[in-house]
Image (tube, rainbow over all chains, first blue to last red; front, side, top):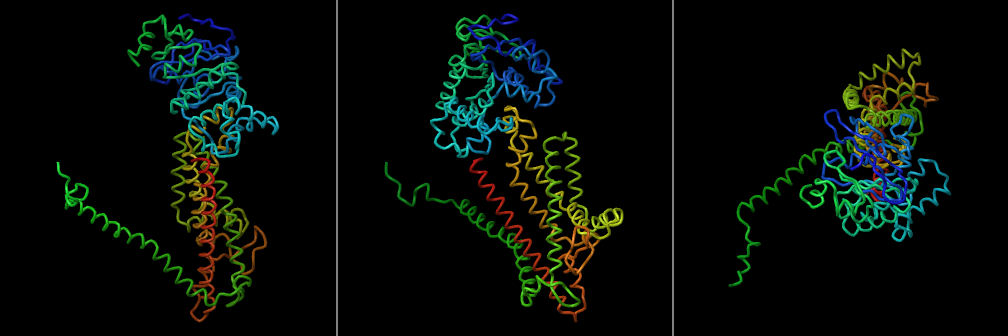
Amino acid sequence: MSAVDIPVGSGPTVMATRGLGVRTSSRAILEDITLDFPDRMTTAIIGPSGCGKTTLIRTLNRMTELSPGLSIEGEVLYRGQNIYDPAVSPVIVRQKIGMVFQRPVVFPMTVYENVAFGLRIAKFDEETLHERVIESIQRAALWDQVGDDLYRPALELSGGQQQRLCIARALAVQPRVLLLDEPTASLDPQAAKSVESLITELDKSLCVIIVTHNLLQATRVADRTAFLYEGRLVEVGPTEELFERPKERLTEEYITGRFG
Amino acid sequence: MSTPSVSEHELLATPAHTRRRILTDRLAQWLLLLPFVAVLVPLGDMIYWISERALPTMSWSVLTENQIGNSGGLHAMIIGTLTLIALSTAIATAVGILAGLYTAEYASPRVAQIGRTAGNVLAGIPAIVLGYFGYFLLVLYTGWGFTVLGGAITLSVLMVPFIYRTSDLAFSAVPATHREAALALGSRRIQYLGRVAFPIALPTILTGIILAMALGLGETAPLIYTAGWSSTPLTGLFSQTSFLTGAIWLFYQQPAGLGTLLALAFQAAFMIMMIVIVVNVALQWVAEHYRRRLRGLLS
């Protein structure tokens, strides 16, 4: 576990954390996290419940700000710029760094309007908006299922389709980074599979960061994996290496199922 | 192994205590019908009592003519009541929804608590006290004298707590996941509120508006001190106006010899009842229609 990790593979680092810490008034949730997230790759964050992995991914697009009482130290860099710099607007941060949550959250609107949501609030003209909506639905591998009727209520879709709709909605804003917080946790295996195969498609053009408690999922979708334990980064490396030849005893114990 | 005969089957044998319980259940069901009927009977009785006295002498002239002396119609009062309720609903709705929004979305827990308590206190203030307050502030202090506007503002103070409370509840009930999802797409809070939260909260807010309107329609006291009285229709926001509840109050007290005025009092009561029913049914239809549309989208 080196202080500044050297990315494996081709893409340059899009996101990084430097000495990142998150604390409540009484305790530290994350301490001294220094991690690099390379472009065109999926990085998985794994660890037992309560290790801080969800908090970590939420600091990456300033969603932590919505929970009062958390203080952030250290830096979160997006292409070299600290996103917590007072001059940086969280609205812009979240346009560049999209996020999809554990449970699909579709708005009570049509499929089309759901995908168009981020574009409408960013005041795109109708023509560009329409193109982007279509393109995003196609990128999210949803066109075959919803292409015939984009104006039906989004809540009529199945769970897996809803989650891919949420991904399409995030993609429409054209982020450089996509954060996925346990995106298949509430889905059945079949739907989970469809989302997973979508992820392996998306990381050809995006920096994807996924939190998962499903170790097999990490091995299936992630190029790199970071293991968190009690708020600290234990180990990070290429997924295969981390799972086959972990450097730390804790990592080995966790991935072999001795705890967590 | 022999098959048990039908009468011995375990599913068919009902022990005595179970039978007793079933009986108790049925009894409870019938007993609970009584208070339910007790809710409906006074309303039905009142509708009958008023209709019986209002309908025999009802004619178009009641709607179209102004009251002159002992005769004429309720034209000015109907216009007055409709104007008052439209104005006060507009004011109370705007203030109530925005205040509820602030309480649910922006205020700190402490400030929200203060707002909610204040709303409850306001809802409990007697209408007559509000009327006096309106008289001092909107009649005397402003120098307006008795006006439609003063009446409507006073009435809206009475209505606002109900719209405020339901708006607060409605916005608070929107799942937090919706806010996160919207903000994660680069939405500002106000955009989230307008595009996601408001449509979800609207049906609930509408029920608050119905309640407030029904309440406002029936009030007399706040208006007596603020809106004045006039037997001809209002001519502007700053003219005096008469109103249906005022007509009931005024005409019902007349000496028995003036039967025509007594009839007018009942006709005014009948009108109010009709307006309340129409407003209720109409707004409920809108809310239900909207809710169904939303449900198609909301599941």
